[in-house]
Image (cartoon, rainbow, N blue to C red; front, side, top):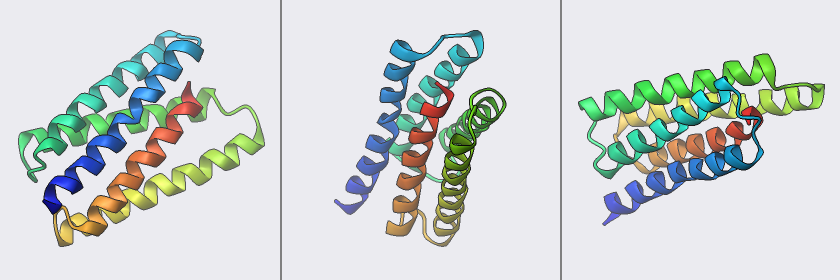
Length: 140
């Protein structure tokens, strides 16, 4: 029962990215790069949903999800930093958000290496999903 609840948390926090896609659809300028970012979000949603339904460590699904997530995160960060941060206030806010993303990714990695799908691992990874979700709005 616990394992099922744990999976559900990460399945739901990943689905927050659908709200980012809705925001993109209604508010983005929809240039070529932002369309690629939206496609990457769809890829992350699909790969994450597939992985967290049965989160077996070091499987091909796990590795594919990790690669897609990293490519997506780095693409969003570079695009946002290079093209979307017009004011110093936004730079400070975004820098804080990136610090949160890096911290929760580090905690997730640390706790997963100690005990896979432990409560601290899942909580830190859920926070990672949440901070990444917030960061997507800076790009769109």
